[in-house]
Length: 413
Image 1 (cartoon, rainbow, N blue to C red):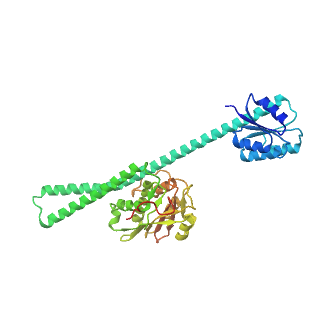
Image 2 (spheres, rainbow, N blue to C red):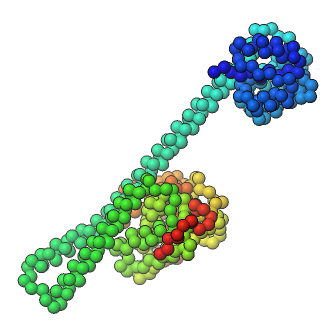
Image 3 (spheres, rainbow, N blue to C red):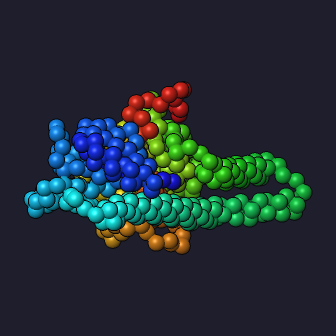
């Protein structure tokens, strides 16, 4: 591709002479003053320009300044018949790459223009290399995020399946016991028959609940990579309520859900949000005293400042992703318990800004490190209110898809 050279001189003779000199090597565009030069660079893809310093109307210095302001990538050389130190300094300060005094020999002139073109080519190479480096960095960042999300999901599903395995083992053992009792008993009548039927019905119901949990998780896992980055708040809470129905901790504790009167949508992966809410709810159920309730709700906020004001905490109780937008509309999912409060060491580890290392699921199943990892992956934030003996409230903040109600029929409980 022939490079384009712009020649600007208000005298026709020197302008045409320069055109004749360079037209065999470059595509030459000419202008008779600074105004035509500005029109030319707006119209043409100019690689380099040769400007006469002294021109009527707009001087070469002024033309240089305007060209560099709008198109800094164009390499410029000034020619002058009145060489002065001050004008040379101005030219260099405004971005000129070359400054020659007239008259100059043809070899020097050609070499100076060649240097301009070479500088332009080298700058394009650097720009292309930088763009490639940025693209590669984006790809690496995306691969890292995918790996972290897959690691988190693997750990979470491992913990969930581990927890579900326990009631399944009990169900299998109890079913075997009932089957053996049935084989060893010739007749079942009266109270024995009623008790046997009730136990068998309870086993079947619990097995159905566990199977539903497994199927729901498998469905979420299949959809997680193809779903849009958009989820309904009320739908998420409904899914959470169904997932929690089979957990043993609910036998002596209660879960109270507060839904939105008009559904809203968040900009996040629904599967990841379910995983975070499930983990927070399980931790709250384990911390809550028997016969007490865990509260789960959702509320819109105009920005982070409104959340902090309502919760009465400062930013030292806040965990947020690097790309979290504190000034955008948010939706806050809140989980509250009346337990002993979060231990200081657990709170400090949770609020560290660096991503957590992969962990093996502990005896209780899911850990707060999973929540932390998914918050950082979904541009979210977490606000923690806790005090010894006064319980814990955790608010998961995610960006709203839109500041108003979602279009279409709202999801209601």
